[in-house]
Image (cartoon, rainbow, N blue to C red; front, top):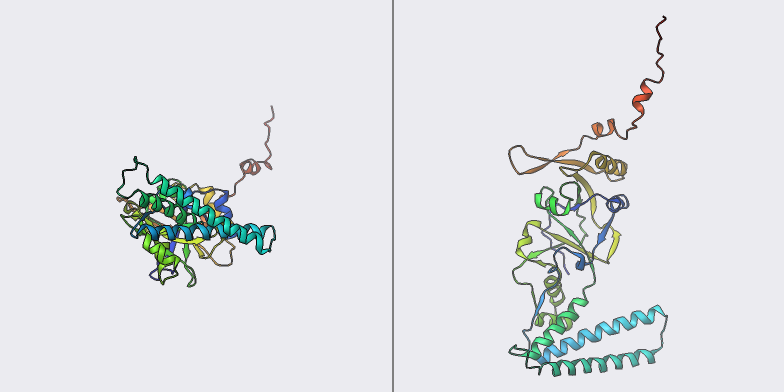
Length: 316
């Protein structure tokens, strides 16, 4: 999928503070999440628009199923270090036979009089193609925003302003993709067919339809996405700044600053304030000297101040 070239100078990740967040900062890693864990259950779940005839839908379904099963069999064979052709050939025959039975079941269920669709078989085939298509997308996603001063983002993802916002500059070789806010979460079956046939642009268009569309109500996020293997991975961007929310505790600010102050590539630290008389949020450079004057503290220090004093007892 080609990266969008009209990119912002920086992108931002809002986070609650936790040991996971601290690990991510210190080790310069990112967590590529399973889209199934996102707070929007409609994300990466487009519906298939069956704009091709049923025979073409059957062909698309067969290719998707065969490719998936063959990939699973190859992975299993690699795991057990098996290289013999006979078992793989047998498995391929079994796959074709299983698909034939599956198709026969679809044709049978299409005769169910309770299905009120104009073309019951098309409805069932489209549902099967949609399910198989979405199974192919098993990558993880990092969601990032364009702004560090969005009150809604701070509330939804920054632990209600108690957390932090991490700013990343974007290297030239980073593959970053803009989310499109679309009222129609659809992917055309003809695009899936073009993708499977290797036609130019087919894969990119299907990728966009599946991975880069959200409802218009999410437009305030101005989201960009990175794709990679699920789980913690090395950061492909450049950590450049950290902002602390309106309610972020001072000890959290101190901990993050101390953890990153000796990093080879310097980082800018800011605190978020409310602009007087407005709902606007603004960032101000963190006064690290003031932050470190009293932290870390020891509560018994005040007792030490008086430990060497001698008390004269008045003579009677």
